[in-house]
Length: 165
Image (cartoon, rainbow, N blue to C red; front, top):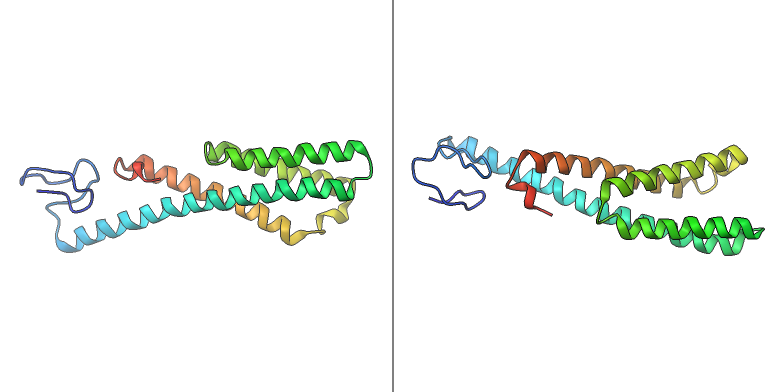
């Protein structure tokens, strides 16, 4: 007999699938409920993957805008160099976020919030300039962190779901 959820082979006397936990001896409602939960969990993992890709695009956008912004707005060479370093840093974060999502997302969010805070301390009106852009960036990075943590929790709970990318 094959497990209807993960397709693993088992003898007819098996009570529960050892790979995914499917209840062979459960009633139809329990079996349907189990499969529905597995589908939802797989969807959560897919959402996390998409959120990380969206965060990657945000990081690339921050990097490109910061680099371009530095050429048009920087009054002195020190500001130009600092903005270019930040821009390139965010571009590197965008590249690395797929390989190490939690660390890169956390670091990028912390750096972004630090920049916003430092700018606000220097001139508090900068906090409101580009507020929509700032909210989108912070929200996207925060959402990706939350989704990634949820997906990792699901993967730890299930050997079967741990292989989903």
